[in-house]
Length: 466
Image (tube, rainbow, N blue to C red; front, side, top):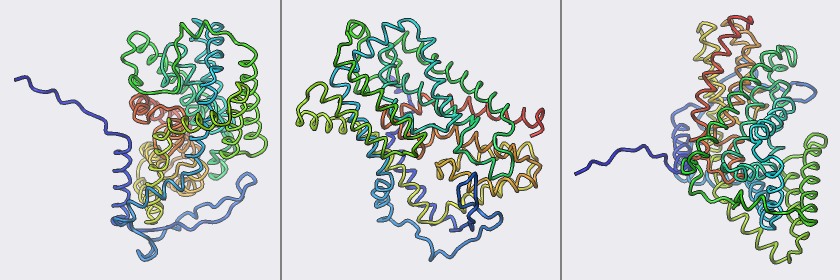
């Protein structure tokens, strides 16, 4: 009798998140609750609450709320509520773009793109990647690009690859640029650490080049594999909103209605970019403009109000899985906040570095920053909590403040593409790429990039005096 081969199987992403919330809930009974004191400080013209170094103190358990059985199950509902703004964005953006796809205008535009750039993927892909990477590294753009995710997913399929290929171009571009943080205004760690803003930009420019080169190589490596054998696509068998056939697309012509829809898309995307950069727009405004864009496209094609409503509902239905991930992941943060254990975890991690040699301490900072990004996914929020602790701790261990900031930028940037509490969950929700498929694609690259970061830290300490 032939023995069955044992194969590792990745559980459903909802199962993984369920057990993460369970572990977090149990930890609220084991980890003693504690808090830092905070003080309001002007950071680059904005008042922010910064941790007071050395102020950590434990509090009585009566002041915290460890997660009980009922609280555990209620945390998923509360996570949905806390993540509602992002979840609604995923629903509405996807539904609006689905309407554009259903009109057929998007297929015509992809056909025109293919005719123009046929056989020029080696130029087109790096070009788009660098646009997103520069936006992330110079202006801290991330959510600003969410509206372009469906376009890039469609482009990946139209070029003969798959949805994950197109998604990787935009998401890796943004993430790697954000992580290099040449002039990213949202990673405010330098000001908090008391060093000149944008100092030692040379090493971050070098990081940007290295990150981009490795990522583009990784994207093409995956693309080459699935071009040779489509069955090796990680998206094989997955349902997507795009049903694009390259041979059919190139035959499609762009008429007046298609040009009007293209103008609709360009004007709305331009409005979104202007709003984010100049008017302080956020997720709600992005969602509103996308809804307007989808309705205008439907009206150009003379859809009836009933048809618009039906297609909108269909678009929402297609993305339920991706939207729910955001809310379920937020449940982890809900229980940790209720238990008042986040500051305790941070303080304990920081204390583990005490007394270590500078070379090891710097690597330890990278580990800690990468882990803490799971429970504090905001870059600026993480900076105001971590840097006031790490900067003076680094002084005692011989780790320069430049190195402290560098490890913060590395840990915060790259893990945004990993943790389900970070931006990657939003991107997967909009793109329709399951988070589990993204992890299969990204985890080996994450390992490679992490080792690269470790080597950059060693180089900076040995040759740059960090």
